[in-house]
Length: 365
Ligand SMILES: *[C@@H]1O[C@H](CO)[C@@H](O)[C@H](O)[C@H]1NC(C)=O
Ligand SMILES: *[C@@H]1O[C@H](CO)[C@@H](O)[C@H](O)[C@H]1NC(C)=O
Ligand SMILES: *[C@@H]1O[C@H](CO)[C@@H](O)[C@H](O)[C@H]1NC(C)=O
Image (cartoon, rainbow, N blue to C red; front, side, top):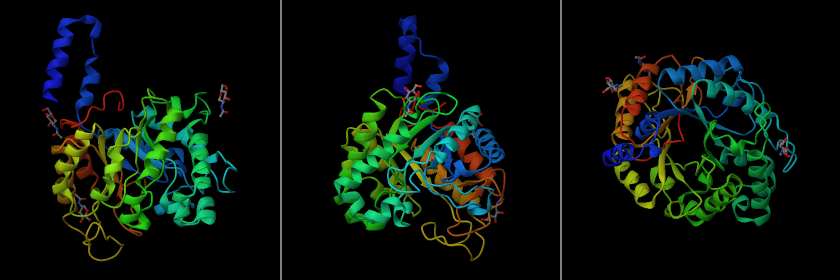
């Protein structure tokens, strides 16, 4: 990176025609952000809380999903939100896309971009329109399923923004990256994921075909259960994937430098798209609610984030709430501005001060 910067400086001296704005060159720094999978279902006042808090912590990206949401997720004031295909495959209900339209305007006001997840394994497993017909296996195997699913991806990316009047595929100032599915195939096991890794590349081909080659929006994978499972060799050789997303909640920090190097060697970007520290003293990859409170949480946040920051790997925390944490289910959540937020904020500011292993110029604000 140092070499690239001085080369850039040389060009600036040599030719004013090649003048790169100084603020763009700061994109060689790393960055942080977070997840909230049901963010589109939150009321607008909570979007303000979420995105202003994230901006105040120097964050750049929020990852959110398209899918059915029950009301009051994690104790929030979120509304019931039907999936795009709540009533059946191909019977599109654009309510959730319109909710994203409104949300992304608020995000943009705070210089946050959206990482858009267009489906989830969770929904498939919970018998959504695809799960009912194909279950969790044939969905990845039958050409009828992939044709129908590709039509969903196309419907989403061609959705005309309600007020901006442009299709999402042209909104690079609002979308950082897109991915077909959260944690595709994870319930099927590591061998199945490896055997069907081409599903991911085929979906990326569909997405790239819709976006075109110069969309300014990255195409990524949506992660798997842990770092090595998220790093399928077939993802790194897939020409349609710009970035590989890894998820990990176990003790995987020592594998980060090698993972970054693997991505660099393949000419791909890498993102630690999901990690979290338990509120309780359970291990991070097995974190049901209950048990005693983890009094080392702040220092574990610092330990994890510094492993990523020192490797130049951008990261998204799982996940941020806009209300006090009700301590439900697997309990990684942190309220924006609440307990442990100051540790997250320091970690994010340190990310913004770290040299990135990848060049995200133009992709983040
Ligand atoms: C989006 O708007 C453009 C221009 O108004 C129109 O040509 C196009 O058909 C619209 N696309 C969809 C999917 O509605
Ligand atoms: C961080 O969270 C833990 C609970 O997981 C709590 O014991 C601790 O006091 C919190 N630290 C701060 C600074 O809020
Ligand atoms: C970021 O870097 C600046 C300049 O070197 C320094 O003043 C600041 O304390 C650093 N912030 C963090 C959170 O590391």
